[in-house]
Length: 169
Image (cartoon, helix red, strand yellow):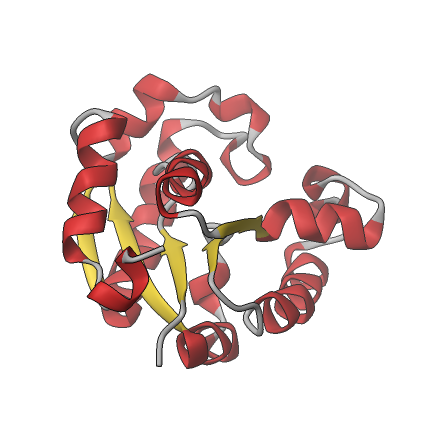
């Protein structure tokens, strides 16, 4: 039985913000994998990326495998978690995968892309990430939610798509 809700999507798609809101609404725990990585390594995501993306992805896989074993938890993933099939296998074991689909235009209008390690080159880089990852988000998603409305409306839309077993908390 799926007892976790796993949010995937591009950086800036709303995974952390919506994850926290869902946690409050549903009374479930909330875990942000990027925060767990920083806690585990005592380094920021940017510092880890300075050692190379492969180095970061190895740590991300290690932390994702642990976090995926949680129960009754909303899990916010890093945008690149889908790049490693093993990450998604771990998350799918107990988790309902929700892809927060958001346009690059909406994302760049909302976030400070200079604060994101993979987005230092701005809109061009975000477009490349979209092109590289979008098919993977769709491939792994159990549910696709277009995050193009207000936060409250998006939370309601997610809850409407959840099985009753995840809504009753």
